[in-house]
Length: 167
Ligand SMILES: [Zn+2]
Image (cartoon, rainbow, N blue to C red; front, side, top):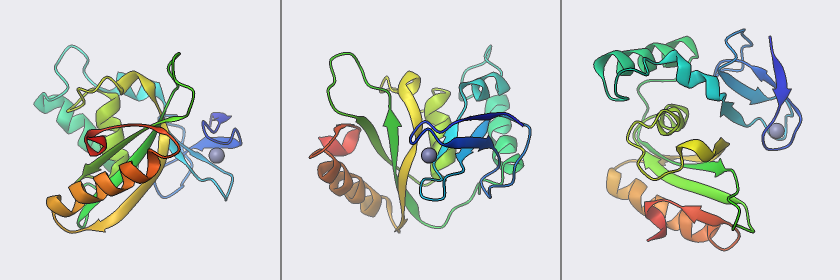
């Protein structure tokens, strides 16, 4: 089992599934600091997919589905989420950068989709660091779109924020 540093707090992070059960996959990592517990995908997860095919090919969608199952990430979720991804800083940026989105998928699945450029055309794919936060309990898309806006506006006071909610 590979041990690497948390991309948020630099504590030890281990390869595990969504339930925290350790494994040797080295694809999904979770910080072991109880106050942090952030999840992040290792870049090598992209190599699990068939890169000769498009991100939305049937084969790649199936690979994603099986990956979710093997890492205990729920494929079906109740309601919708607003999620916050930490991004690496760009040269001209002075503050920490975040991406805020809303989804009917589990936030870790959506994060992976951004990483493998599936429904992610905002140029953030190469800047993804970790899943900073997510909020559940949104019942309709209208509800989560509004949540995305509210959370984006709040975060814009302290961070550089990307995503539809900033408009
Ligand atoms: Zn951490």
